[in-house]
Length: 578
Image (cartoon, rainbow, N blue to C red; front, side, top):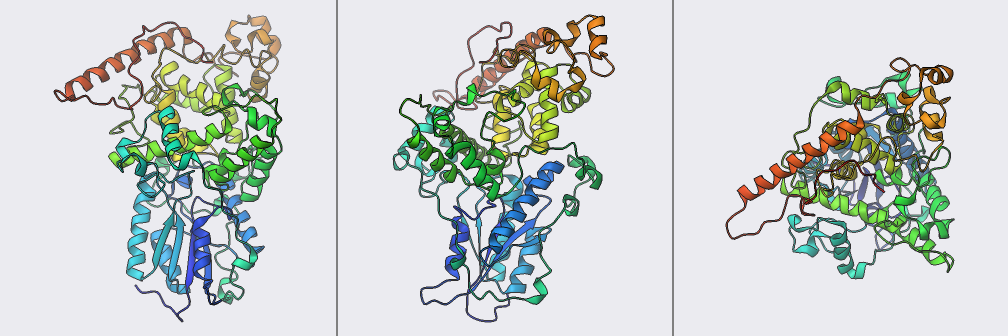
C-alpha cells in the first residue's frame, strides 16, 4: 500500500495512546514542527485516537475506567478545538485502522509516545504498525515521555547508564536513586509547554466528509468488543444497564484539564503540606477527602506527565515555610514519582530478559516461585468483599464503587489474599485490580503485588498486616467500615472490626445476622497467618536450594529479584506493619 499524497507538503499524524495530554508532549510538538517549516509553509496535522479494545487500558476494564478514558478523550478533543484543531477518533485494530487513515489523508509522518515497558500487546502492536508504516512510506517516530527519564538504552536512559544491559538495572529503590543521581546530577528535565493555537496550521484542509466522522464516543457501550476473546477471557464484563448504575461514584473524573486542576489543588496550593508529605503517614480510612493527591489515575493514562508533577512539587517545596519539616524520597511526593519510574524500569528489565514475563510468576526474573493454592470460592469472596473481615471488605467495596483505594488499603487486601490469610496467587489479585482500578498500570500494579505477596523485592514474610488491628489506631470508631459496609453501621465500636465477638443481643440490636446479611470470617486469621508463614519459609528454602543447584562453580550469582537475601529469622506471630 502506498499513501496517496496530493502535494509535497507534509501531512503529519500524532497518534495519542496513553499520553492523553497537550502539555509536555514531545511527540505532538514534533509532529507540529514538521508541518510548520522555516519558510512559513504549513502542512496538515491529524491528531488521532483509536479506541482499541485489546489494549491494556481496555481489555480488562470496569465501567468506571471506560468512562474515565472517554472523558479523557473528550477533554482532549475540546482542548484541540480551542486551538483550531480537533481529535479524530476511530475504533478497531490500529494495525488495520492506521494504514486506512494514512491513505485517506495522505499522511507522510506519524509520531507517538513510546511504550517502553515491553507490555506484550503494545510491543506486538507497535512492531506491526512500524512495518505497516514502512510499507506505506510513512515515517514513524516515537518519543519517550511516560517516565521522568527514558527507560532504555537511549541517551539519558536508565539502561544506557548501567552499561546498556536491561538485566543490569538496580533491583532496590536505594540503588535506583543512586542511578538517577548519576544521570545529569539527578536533575529532571523541565516539562514542555502545551502548543498554542498559533502552532497549529492556520488553514487545515477541511474535508466536509470528515465533519461528522471520527467523533469521540459518547458512551462506554459504544466501545467495540475485544477481538478474539470470549466473555470468559476478559473482565469485568458489563452492559448498558451497568453503565447507568448510579451507585458507582469514581473518585475523580477524566481529562487533562481536571488533572491540572487536581495538581494545583493538592500540590501547588499547599506548599507546606507538599513539602512535609510522607506517604506512610497518610490515612487510608478517610471518608470524605482523600489524604493523598489522587493523581495516579491521571498519571496512568498520561493526562499529566510525571515531569509536570515533579516540577510542581519542586516549586511547592521552594515556597514552603522555613519551619516546615521537609520529607525526602522514598516517602516524599518526589519519592512517589521515583517509585513510579523504578517500577517501570523493572517491568522493562523483566520483559527484556524474558518477553511477557512481567505480570506473571513463570520466567519472571524478579519473582520467586511460590506454590500458591487455587480456591475459586475464596477468591470470589475476596473480590466481592465478603470475607467476614470488615476492614478488608470495606476496602473492596470502595474499590468496586470508586475505582480507587488508598495504598495502605491496597497493602492490606493484597496481603490478605496472598501470604497473609487466603494463600491465593498474587496473579489473581493483580488481574482483579487491573480490571477495577481507575489507575490500573501495567508496571506499577504488578510490582506492588510482587512486593506485597513477598514474591519479589520485599522478603520479610513474617511481617503481616492484621485485618483486625491494623487500622484500629487510625479509625477506632470504624467510620470507614460504617460507610462501605453499611450492614455493620449500627454495631458498637468495640465490635466493628470483629463482629463475630459480639453476643447475639448486640448483633440483633445492630441488625446484623452473621452468615446471612454479613458473612462469618472466611478463615481464622490467627491460625491462617501462622500457617502461611511456615509455607512461605518453605518456599524460600526451596528457592534457596534451587539457586544453589544452578549456581556455577566458582561464580557468584545474584539472587532472583536482586534485592535482600532470605531473612534468617524464625517465623513468629503476626506483627503489624507500620
